[in-house]
Length: 480
Image (cartoon, rainbow, N blue to C red; front, side):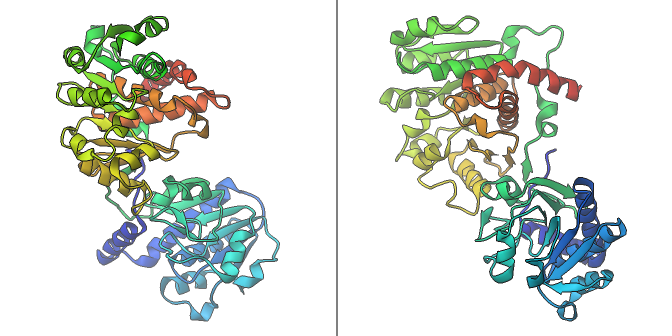
């Protein structure tokens, strides 16, 4: 499985359940603080540490970490928002473990240090930092944060105002939305999770090969091309054929046994001049598409298709066939203002793959209009009745049953024309081989991101399919 993603509120509830069952809360804090110290010392092994403590649990973790770092022979100075006598509960017990001086927080601004341990406030913060805390956040420098960098709402994944920008963040039991969603994830740096004895249950996880590896298509000795599925991609007109070919090539590279581009007659010549292993079939209209879909496992509609009545008719035709549908781009925009006509036809194993603009046009609300992008995608999947892959630097994949996967394995170099068409082809190619839609989408997003990482600077979408064989070979080696 990928790392679980839980809200700050879910973490609080999980902790309370553990405490109610008899676990001492200070024991949990001690585990957390020790994990913080080990994380910081292992990755930033040199230099004076300036520990900034708040009055609650986050600050308590900071006091425990300070004591542990001191025993690791680190030079440590501790600063707190409150004087030691006013601390209560576990935070007071933790402060008692620190046998050095506790300085007022304002003294930290000019104090020399190499690295800051931000233990001021956790991910449950609901108001902006102000005063000295805000000044410290804006000071810059090397920072390691506990739970979530102070100043960020762990649930909504949004900065509330001034906030710390960490090189590393350590959290407990599972990730928070702020660790995986933009813009907050950009402030978290390297994120580590520590087991502190608080079990959590969630329907939301971070994407990982461990999640879909067991379902990844594998070839037996007697396999033949027809057994690997037939993917068909509907092409746009003669002036807009490249998107369909990108999707088709990606589908073939990821393992579909047969791939056919379904081309309007006027685009057959231009498509034929670019295709070799990928087959070509002319279609005049939705009637021809209905016939073509009978031999397909999966059909992609939308890339550069045009926002036209013909595109809408093609979508409706595929959704009446036995083939699973991958709907992207124009296949979504064409239903702007009449999404119910699409939603009543979509099936749970179909998938739509909007970017932010297409999402807004189809659903009538923005991806950031809800609590966070995860909850928005989950709401959309329930409304549409199919899997939703909401693209971006923090792609979220959600199913109608509430499961959600967040892909963090990507690179900014993927922000280029045609990248989404390749992604559609990858997931359709996996679906054509029998993978469940949600897991196929998760694997496609991960492979897409890995291909982008391997290409790096100067990436164009045509580069991506060429890296798929090496990625698949590595995955099969890891999963053997």
